Image (cartoon, rainbow, N blue to C red; front, side, top):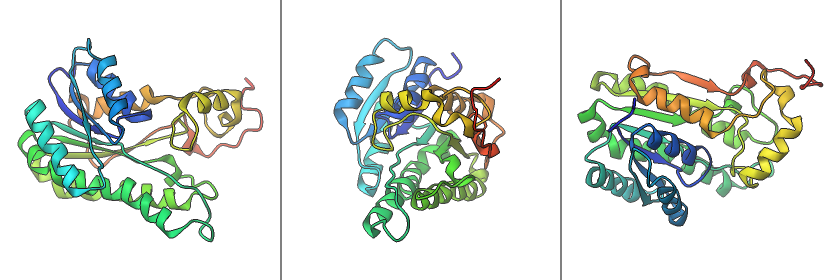
Length: 260
């Protein structure tokens, strides 16, 4: 197994891309500290993966808290023996134009999407230096192709992308690689629906005319890219921003997305 024994922390692990990443990493043999605020979901995920080659350890934390970020790292050291990779997946969005979006909602997006990356990476830095480890941050293709009414989320994910490049430069001499994955339109709970509701909506074809591939992506597609970056395949890659989006950033607008 390509990731056997790797010690990986995944934030935002209770649903969506985070949970999908935990599943794939554990199946590939990695030992994972699964971090989120919803402890009951983390425990259910760990129970689901009890027979996987890798071990999943649930840990409740608010990654916008410095104390919780440091406690997360201490838990990873205690449970896993260290950290080989950190996947910063925690995220949140409130939509609205600038004249309607409340300031506290904008600040909350910056805390959840941007400050969490700063706090968790800083807290894990000593362990990552010891292991010459990897950081993967989750951005979004909205940075390259902004939709209307989502400027706050675009701003937050743009900051994550820029921070990833800056950290790649700063930490490269320590042997630490830092990269950013930009998922495309993937069913998730981020926009207020369940993953199943979003998948049913996407499978009507409503979004497919905006991407090159006429199929709906899912968490596993993103998780495969993350697994590659934290494994040996990505050993010479840092500062990269990788689109996993079915061709969404190509900027298509096809009125007949299912036409051959």
